[in-house]
Image (cartoon, rainbow, N blue to C red; front, top):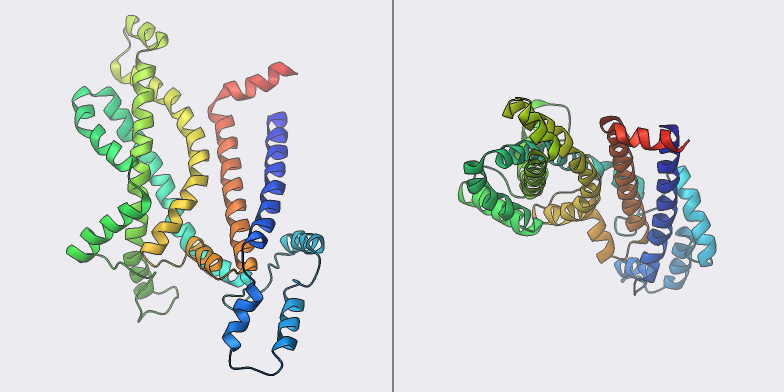
Length: 329
């Protein structure tokens, strides 16, 4: 287990270094000048414009060579000081991230976990029941092939506009003040449901299809047939089939976490939800180097940590992983 963890930590460390380097370079390869974009807000200032521009370049360290900026970027990672946002000047980037990440965790984590659990259960039932399979599979394929933005528009139209059950914009009511009180919590949950439900539906289909295929494969394998000849019940065979079939689904969960971030951006834009994805889109449109870097780095860390946790879980639920490293010694 120790060897397994060391190998994984080394792999994630290399991935982190490469991701940080790419994260530093991409904003600086974008056309345009963020300082000029910021100066456009002071268009009424004629005198002293050049002095102000120089002072801003000093403030954002954009007067330094690229390699010095790169070293300073690594220093900011370990001090959690990502600079000041150009778009939301003079608000620090870390303050923006702290406000936005709450909404990401509130939507992403419940949608990922619940869709994985429900999708695997429905897929296992579909794979072991021919009649249910014929009814549910078209629905699962429909969900799995739906783009996030399209599903968001569909959910917003039917549940928000047509039926008027849920609001379609914002994280909470305009009359509410954020705090730990019943009124704000109910308003937050009322606005939270549509973004959560959209991401839950799109992911649900993929999990169900994957588990359905695995159950069909496992129940037709040699060990299942052998258990059947020994007189084992269909329920017992399905239970063992589910335990083996869920292993690839755990691996898929690690891969899906990275892809869901892209879906979160489109969903947050549709519902005007102030998560990291929407903030990063605003940063790209405004050429805000520091906001883009800070948010993208936060997403990288979240994805790597989630994948590492899934790898540890996989090590415990599949003894073959531990056994493979034991045999190498």
